[in-house]
Image: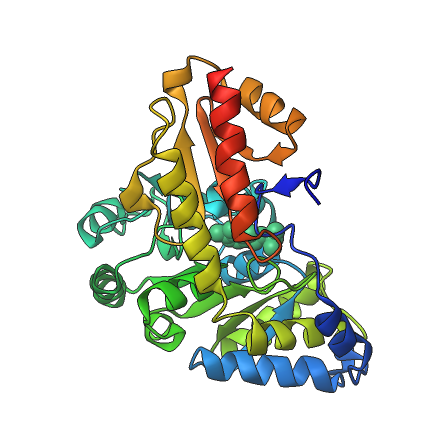
Length: 346
Ligand SMILES: *Cc1c(COP(=O)(O)O)cnc(C)c1O
């Protein structure tokens, strides 16, 4: 196994376990466009309940879940407030402009976190010649900031502001599970402060496909219609929903292990003077490694690490990103540290 590739590019590279595949194989299914897939219906009830909302909708991807939220909460010409490194702004191929006809106002966060005061200053006054600010999207944990956790108190302030100024709130909670496990704050507590929340089953939870959006029955019925418009109406999707149910039942608590692996990785790399890590940003399963001290571009380092069978991603011109997950062991993390050490010293 020593020649095995250590893949720390993302927690999306996890493959469904045998037990998960068995659950998929045994899933009871029906046509979900008719609302008749019992496993999809069960998943939607479970997720709605877990997040303390009236209803949930299963989607093929996290991008679709986020875009449904934007579609449901805005009118064409509106403006949506997001953090400048958010997934919605960075990695959703400008979908808000294509699918909802809205523009994004991007605000610089501190480690991905915006303050209520910052958001308040960016909300447009009600002038006919200005866009209407109608939605605030936050991200927890924040991907590009390195898996950082949104402080609940800050979200409460933003929620009060949104209520006062009549803006809707959406949480991109692709990794909300990680925030839950790291803080002990139940997803319900976070979700209570948002109109809609999206969650992902195909990241650290290890399902092959699938996300969900939760909210009121009224918003979810509109989201269902838009999901069909976006091409996301699925038929015997219970096979996928079974994987998501399995993931919820078995793979949330174990995210702790991924966080421990990220910590170990950060500790190990701290011994390398040219690899800088901001330890207070290592809060969950992502480690950002500032390689500017090596005077080599991140892309060149990636190539050299790849020849040693270690895969990371480039998070900036001199920054590498490592994400821990269930398909990488603690031993492999120790090996990853050694590979990085040897590449940097040669
Ligand atoms: C992965 C991710 C998504 C959804 O991505 P998909 O690949 O469409 O499932 C959304 N938001 C964040 C923060 C993510 O990390």
